[in-house]
Amino acid sequence: MVEAFVLIQTEVGRAEVIAKQLSGLAGVLSSEYVTGPYDVVARVGARTADELTATVVPSVQQVSGITRTLTCPIAGGAQP
Image 1: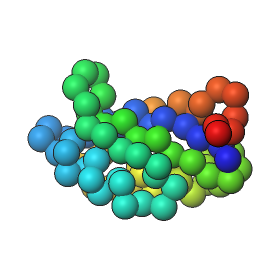
Image 2 (image 1 turned 90 degrees about the vertical axis):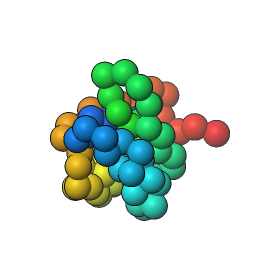
Image 3 (image 1 turned 120 degrees about the horizontal axis):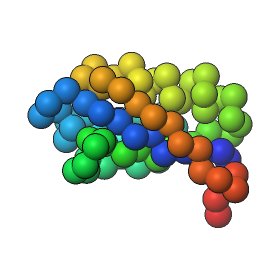
Image 4 (image 1 turned 180 degrees about the vertical axis):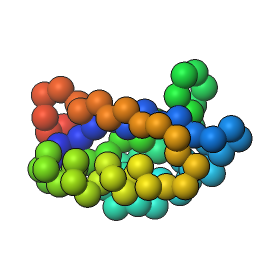
């Protein structure tokens, strides 16, 4: 499995709602709203890097209220 963290900026006041919406999407392993320069951090995963970039990340980016994302693949590949 290939995993990544997606750092997400949202419209003002929407972080909690968006974090909850993301947690229901296929490929989203966890989703939390946070403080700092990003509003939500999601951990995502897929069988391959191609599936992650072609399917999972775009589904996250299409959630209404998200203004910017930064995808950070987890170094070392598969996690136990």
